[in-house]
Length: 254
Image 1 (cartoon, rainbow, N blue to C red):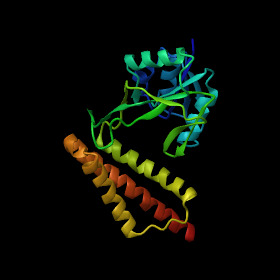
Image 2 (image 1 turned 90 degrees about the vertical axis):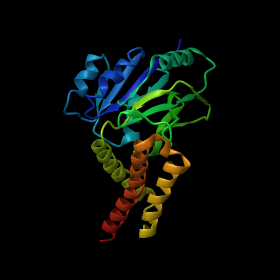
Image 3 (image 1 turned 135 degrees about the vertical axis):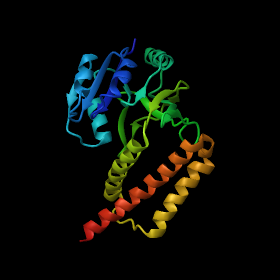
Image 4 (image 1 turned 180 degrees about the vertical axis):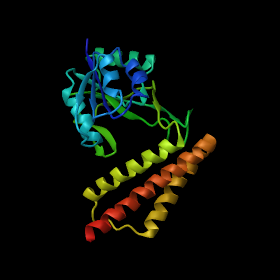
C-alpha cells in the first residue's frame, strides 16, 4: 500500500484553510509550509494535525519545493489553500498510490470558480494541473508565480475527476492578486529576458491578443458577464506584466 504526503504553502489563509485541510484529512501526512502568517493559519493547521514549517517567502516554486523536500512519503499531492479534493478524487488518488504499476505523475482537471460561479469556457476548464507525483521523480519549476511540476520522466496520466478551485470571491481581491502576480512575473521576465524591448505596440497587442484569445477563440463569451470580466482581467494582467517589466528596465538604465 503506497502512502501520500499532501503538501501546501500558506500565507494568511485562515479563511480558506479549514475546508482545504478537511478534504485532505485522509492523507498519510499533511505538510504545511507557512511564510509567516499573522492570522490563525498556523494554529488551524496544527489543530488539523499537520506538520507545520515556517519558512520566509522565497517564491512560489521555491516554497513548494521546500514542502516537497520535507515530505516523507513516496507520493506527493500538492494542493493550494483555495483548492478542495472531493471524495471521488480522494478515492482515485488512493487507487493510484496502491497500484505498483502507476505512472510517475497525474494531472487533474479543475472546476474553477470565479466571483462565486463555476467557469466553463475561456480557458478556465479543464485547466489541467499536475499535482500528484512520485517524490523521487518530480520538483516544481516554471516561471513564478505560475509554478508547475517538472518530472524527470514524462510518464504522466490524466485523471477525469476534478479538483475544486475557488479562485476570487470578489472583484477587489481579483485586482489585488493581478497586481501582485504581474509584479512577480515582471521580475522573473527581467531575469530571463532582460534585453526584451517593450513598446507601446507590444503592450497594446498583448492586451488585445489575450482578450480575443480568451473571450472569442476560447469562448469566454459563453460565461456571460463573468466571462467578460475574466477575459478583460486576463488581458489586463498580460499587458500589466509587460508594463512593469518596462518600468524595471527603465530603472536599470538609470
